[in-house]
Image (cartoon, rainbow, N blue to C red; front, side, top):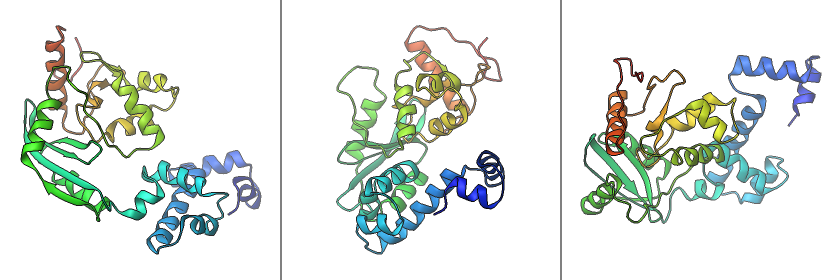
Length: 262
């Protein structure tokens, strides 16, 4: 595969100009595009039963660790996880009620892998597509106990999470966990916390991809103006959660119809 400099040289332009032009036309950087192509080809080879070392060699990667890094960045899972398709993975799920409406929860042997407001049909379908070899079962009793603990204000035993994420997503989600109930953060402030002050959009995407509502408090992130901004499960629900947390922590918060703090 040609390097960025080699491609730019063939077009008789500078590498910097080529990168800017490519990113503007394609929407992603040449490096990101190359990683996507590499991972797609690797998925085909892994599905055909090729060993990891052979796949790395076929893709002209220096080692299987490079393939591992590409998969983590693009698919948020290891090559081995992708090839297993969820074999030996048991996912138990259920629905229940919460102070903020119907909620769906799912857990593996390692911990909670999904918590979403609504009936959870989309989340369940996405998991079944991602882990076709996994064993799925609806278990009402265990789900109710998990939901009770998730929405409890008591400081009992911490809940374990089982999340698939890129390194960047994990950085953002860890920063979200540092925002205490009743406090707010902007996307820019969140970026500064992880040393990515100029990556507000990427931070926003990572916040929006959070698979466990409430437990990873993406609802505590607002716009620079103070407006609530968007929320995967609805701005009305986001406002209700924030007001509930503020009340529980003795904080007075008044908002206008546009979601701005007054």
